[in-house]
Image (cartoon, rainbow, N blue to C red; front, side, top):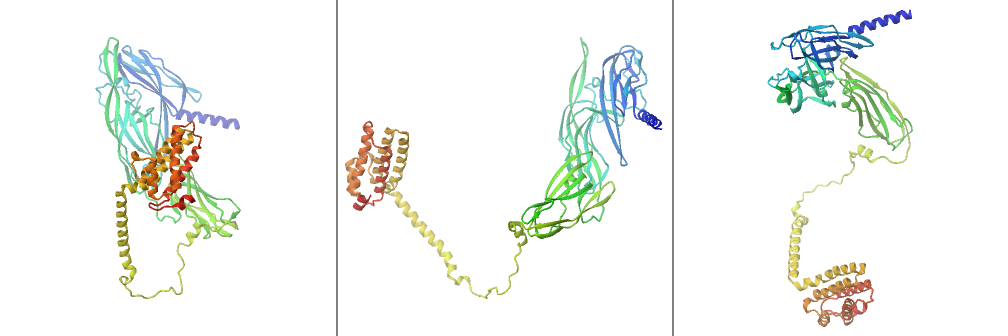
Length: 610
């Protein structure tokens, strides 16, 4: 019995294979002697190997076989039909008039070699008019043009080159996925393709499918064979009902034709580019509205989904410690655009906005994958709590109805933890203060604001401020007009900058530079302080001016001695042994004490005390 069953299965498999796979030949019925022609062997709905070309008399093989593959699918009444084909094309040249016999070609399919039928082509004498190369096989499609026959004077019609917008379904529900494919059909080689106006998708959410356009497939459309390339492919999710139209696009295309000429080497051809402007078709799809009434738990999910929930951590909840209530939504449809369901947490929980993480893939005409929605919450009080049961509703477009999934409730035992209620919880629950009761301390008053002295004070204060500012400004102008006074006031600041420069020489050990800068600081300070031009400075008039200024004798002697010390060190550096930092400190002390003496006041006490 087992052997009989195996034999029956084997016979059924052979019969199905024989019905599914076919190996046919396509060839022109007539050609002119000296011209080229193609013979194509087509294997349908199967994959083959070890192709054996036919024996041909009356023609010379130029090149081949060249192999191409094509795939096509159609959608009719909810059913998808797919087909595929392999084509082996041989290019021959007719060498003598008469009958050209093309024998059978063979190929191995599923371990069995199958053969095509033999055929005959009539070769007309040279000089005869070129016949149309219709396929010899009845009902077979016309092959796309041989590049060598695409002369430059041949016009390119809209049937030779066009862009087509194709929709995977003629009608869908709102939010139901539909695949839009923009495809190029051509019988010519393309050297350049540039979109100038892209089709618009008003009324749709778009998920573009990444593709790399390439002109590497051959398809049959309306009985004509074309080289095709997918320019753009995307999944569309309609957002409204009614008829939605995808507008046409405009493209600049450069096709390659050939200019044939005769030379001493025979007939030759060179490529010639022709620029064309191509406009695609428009595509309209009918969008069905979602049935009414919509369930309260429906949030816009369309497709097929499954939902599970979990808690992290699963147990051991404590107050003031964060936890997560997680929604796991899996399936296919508009999963990326599902809104977070509303979850009713206990009032004693501090709940934050949900975070969504979508992990989806562009599948066969829809998106599928997983969406994780995390609800972070922090219990604020210890006790027993429940996250109540809920529902998740989606619309199944294949069944045409809503499907509701029940989400079970979750019980939490919260223990006392360390901390205190969060600011987020307090602000959320205390945004409206309780109404104050009792005596509010209100009193009735009929006074006028102009009768109060504070009203007039606001006018008086700006006036006083303006007067004070004018007096200060006049004082500044008067002081700046007194050049001697300004030089005296700046004397200390200028001297301090020069002493700082001298300190830099001291840090580098440059004694000459140090004492030169010290002398500039001391002489410059005396000139500015006493208002004596630098050209008239001397130790005698410095001593006299300091005495007149009110400086005591001790401080005057120290000032002159400091100048002598710096001059001696500058002109006899090999004999100077004073520490430069000590000299700096001494100069800073002398200048500071001089600054503390007011003009015309003799400060014997100050000189002694300092």
